[in-house]
Image (cartoon, rainbow, N blue to C red; front, side, top):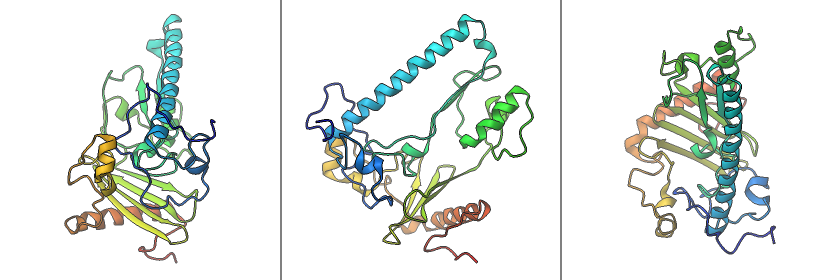
Length: 283
């Protein structure tokens, strides 16, 4: 029955992701959300069989996309335009598929917030990589800049051409994230360098949580639940002591204050209509 979670694991299914959890430690803030409770064959199941089989389907989709991109590249080479073409490979979001006990995209963890962003073309050094931040709204100004077309005055993004051409390493020092699809105010995040803050104020104030991560030391944003023997046995990954939510540890209090201030400044700058329980009230 395709409506019910599977009882067996496909023999070709990928391993569990190391950030897998049987459930998220608190409500994600969007009741009756399709991706979390209503996907046929998944529902609310986060068992090893469910997650591994779903990952297999995701990887199959990625492989198909790769094949189609290959067809485009081959055609460009065939007509002699490959060396004269900028190719952008990206997406609108990631997806959890069992990571942190979630299945969908409606969260601000790296696995769902980040997207692929691969660019090739004239003047771009092959295999180069940049660790800076960008938004998808930077895509239009970048395409205009690369093509010699005036950037529309209404465009809110920034051209990434200086980064692509190796002239600059950073265009954006900060990255701001917001999810307001469920109960308000929802989730907000700020990222600067290796540090990332996520705040939750959902379910009419019933869920109020703060998370602080050092992404260099904890790239998968592991939390205390990932340290349980049952989870470690399933994932095969034993997190180290630093791979937890750092928000409640006193030795990171100054960093927490710094990130909280950065978040509030971005919320003000972007005219965010909401405030969290521990932020100054709107006038």
